[in-house]
Image 1: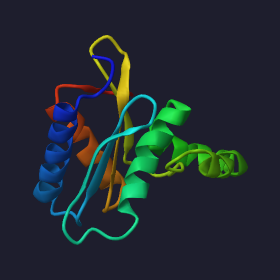
Image 2 (image 1 turned 45 degrees about the vertical axis):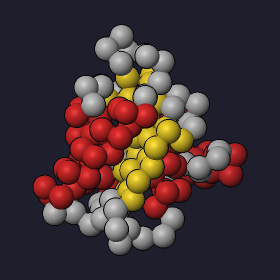
Image 3 (image 1 turned 135 degrees about the horizontal axis):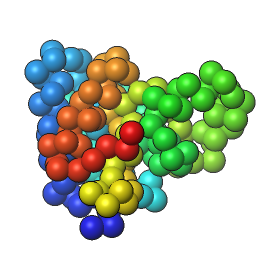
Length: 142
């Protein structure tokens, strides 16, 4: 497998939504992208607010663009705000410097894509992202 399959993407999304329900979170939106940042699947729960597609995809694709989680990008934005801000306009989904975007690996450590979740606090978004990746039998980059 060189990228997340549509079947795995749907498992990831369903499990992320399930985790959100378990935690009693606000409506979530989840984007799954391939290693090139191209959208594989996206869903948003009823009552999720406007722009959630762009935010979720920006968390996922941004993680891929810089090779680190969007949580790490948040830290980078504090240290190097001009650099992180300058990347937004040159990427299709922008770069969202807030936790919830995680790179997905296979058992060999190959990058298969990334997942971005948005809708609640960034910490809760990340919990849902990680639950989705685990449910699909894939690994989250540390």
